[in-house]
Image (cartoon, rainbow, N blue to C red; front, side):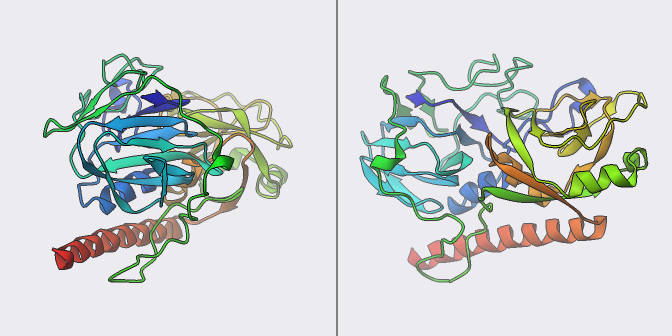
Length: 339
């Protein structure tokens, strides 16, 4: 197995354990994680493999079926280019390769059988900072030579060679935002939007009163750039300082997507592996529907924030849930018709 920059099992995270000091963790692009499982007609809680910036390579020791979602990357099985967001057959002894993405950052691999994983606090996620989870309960992702098993005993073998990450040598996979089912329906695939510039909506929080009008104008009327200091914990942004707040605050719990403003006057967007408490002033939080966009950001990506009210945020979340549910039901119906 070639793991690339990082590859690991992931799921929807450790929900309900922050009061014990453990981070939530989980897939950064939950939309792509759920979509991959929906394509395979398995529960959205099933683990997937999260691959960061490509470079992933593995060999199947038995025939299986998989789906790959997320970043726009060249995907090959046995050297043949395959489409994203579709169910495909992965034959025994064939090599699966995910190249470096042309757009986006993370891909998700689901299969028609549940991966065999070890759970810590009801989740398989590996968190390096806490040294929790993972195949060996050490917080580490996959290593070269690891063998991944399914609950049925079928396994994926490993190779010791590194995967090529030169996507220019391969046919570019179709735009996963425009894919349409080839049969049964023309319903668009509810894939995460990929872009070079992401419009991210936020709901202002109760600490917004600490930010005067000029600071809010600077915050909402500029495009920030994702710095190299971007990880599963959070994304540090660069740009023009919005100003400094001198008030010292007590540390308190931090929501997924909370936007902290550092003493430099620049934002940090907290993500799935954020610390459980923090004391920087928070201007607001990213709405749940837009969090998957942040999971596809990479250094150099551009982010512009827009204000959103709570009612709209709720409606957007409900709409996304309905779209994913309808897609999953459609997959079930289409497969039932083919059987």
